[in-house]
Image (cartoon, rainbow, N blue to C red; front, side, top):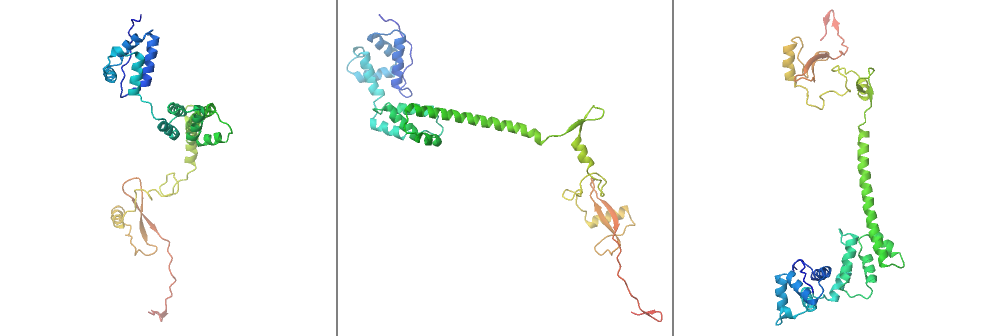
Length: 304
């Protein structure tokens, strides 16, 4: 006689699948040695929960719970919680089921097999093979499979799984190769040649020494840099001529003022940008080019 009481989860009609729940319960009875019909019925009433028990009482009324067998309980509750769907409706869902964009091949195959269970197909594997080929997401693999004369269900399944696995491996290799290329190219772009000094105590940058020595002295400021005038595109600008006049008059009184009417050969004023805040005002002279003049005199008097 069975005296053992099993422990099992209550059935939730909102979230649980009745067919899966009841199959698990029967396996639990088998594992715990619950064999007789009365023991199965008593254990089911204990673990099913109050809502399922009330539903069963409503479905078997006017009979009582002790008057029905365990097989009758299974039939009554299965019709209530898991009514058999219409075959035409399920077949329509099966034919329209394509692989989703983010769905793996294994999940797609499992969902198709689940739908086929309610379609009552005569040749289930033939229908699964056709639906897998027509509904797969990989167009290249679909083209290769359609070129074959005879296809079996297992051949299509193996091709889908191996193609998906190979695609993952290729993406992993490409990502690894790109990361390796980034880490190896970056040091080459910033490579600097170093050597030791004659004493061997401190490294010396040859590129910096060679580039520094190859630049000539600037005839404007005396420093080593290229021929571009410092401050031409920077913040240093030519000081207005009025300010240059004031500064020149205060520092070198002998220098004449400079304006647009300064004659040829007269000293002029030029501002030179310097690292400081004020420019240097210098003097320069243009070369003198005079036109030849002819003077006429009559008896020693100039002719006007």
